[in-house]
Image (cartoon, rainbow, N blue to C red):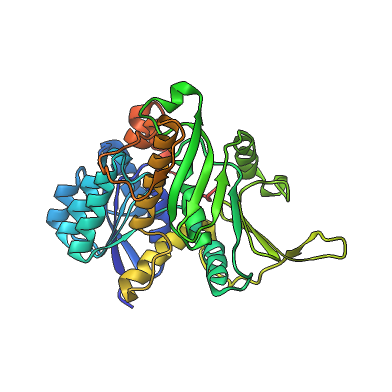
Length: 374
């Protein structure tokens, strides 16, 4: 099978994870890297044995039009990179969260890719994990009965950061778009600013009619830190997105899925141990799901695990949460009519670590990535 040619646009920490994955797959070839930091560009190029190194995307596209471009720049420069790659004829493009600050920018990225016939994928989101995707398929097939309820137990503080994860999981596992939002926010200084960071509580009304409460709990930050070090510390005490039918409950927590089906003689839910298909390249965690999904879509036109549309929908929901809180907890109907609405991402996401006080050292950039949580 002819290898697909891949370019990495932005080779910071996350870009290097993409480069590692694409360099290890037998059916892809990393042929180019674009990066504004010249020292890091050289270090990463040496690390991956890539000689086609560019300081900007225009120079790269004059020389090389890859089959796949992984746009892993900070959010501020994602729109420019996606549109230029699509207009140049790149077959498949992925980008990450948040894909834009302004809703109209997200719209334009999707519209340009659609007009050019470019496959536009989402990136490193937990819902792309193979087990999550397989569970979503089972739910859609009715394996656990008709879903009748749901709750988001710990909405992330950063609505267009971690919030994209929760919103995307809700849409996927409910197999439904969000139709309406009513939300409360705190503290007041967070509510009435342009930032995507806000403690939020409220109710989503899905297009299928199910109402899903959501609330924020700071305990998630403690759990996430423990989780990165030792998954067993969470055990069954973790909170997440729960959805349920008359006899089943499915709980999502990042790439982990807990399923309960039926009841014991005391009326308690019985754990259900699913038989997931084995999958390769587990060492890249849910990055495997998103990258392999894009590769397959470019080759065969198959469905993406996470799409640019999914990233855009999550941003729109996040904006709706903030609007409802700002307007006095009024219900906000989706889609939003005013596409100029925006939320400013955290500085680290907007301009990257180099410009927000967390630069990557050249020695780190030169080292091999050993694992997703290491």
